[in-house]
Image 1 (tube, rainbow, N blue to C red):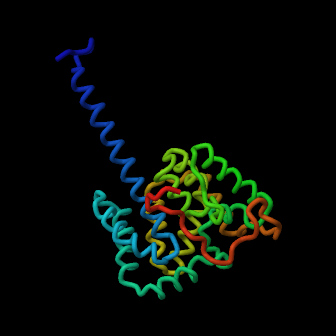
Image 2 (cartoon, rainbow, N blue to C red):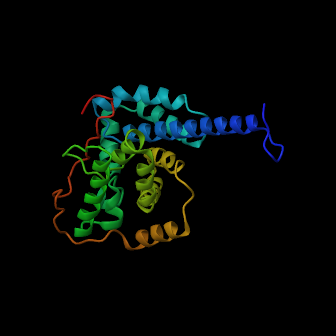
Image 3 (cartoon, rainbow, N blue to C red):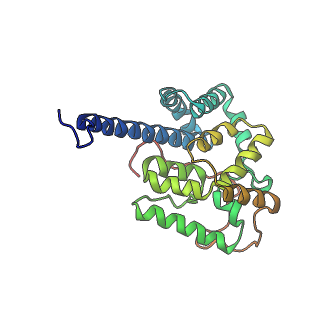
Length: 241
């Protein structure tokens, strides 16, 4: 056993570093499980959704106790106990652009403007630089897609994207809470994985809530018009793309 010049134990320092690395690894794993689970739970409740639901519930149940775990487990229980057709109808009703409950994050900041097309292209470029490909039928700013990228693609860049779109995420949370849907629990779990909001974030969310998304009704080059039905979730089963 060796000591440093100030009398501290080198072995203690090494042990602390190892424990610190272990804690960071556990935090990273926990966040990835939360993001991957939320990605699945925010998908349209089709057959694949219900096949994955038990797997998601088991993965969440293995997380350390905490608010995100509680929120996700409560939603899993709700989804498992709700008839499939009822959950499908509720999903379509909840995530309605006309009522500002969109799962597309750039909608809150850019609306249907040319600027949104640029924002979408930037997100897609960030994915591509990490070797992550989004299927043509999906918009890259769909919250479920962003979450899957954060969980399985690049955790740091994905987290940065979520933080950059925090204003939209907070507006979605408030709209879901006001509507009284269990989906608010999934979004709340995501918010628990983000750092505390900055004053600028709160101000931006307040301004967007007052003014609403910009409206221009122009093309969404290169993505085409906004879809009228919920976008399907990317394949999170682990199958090759």
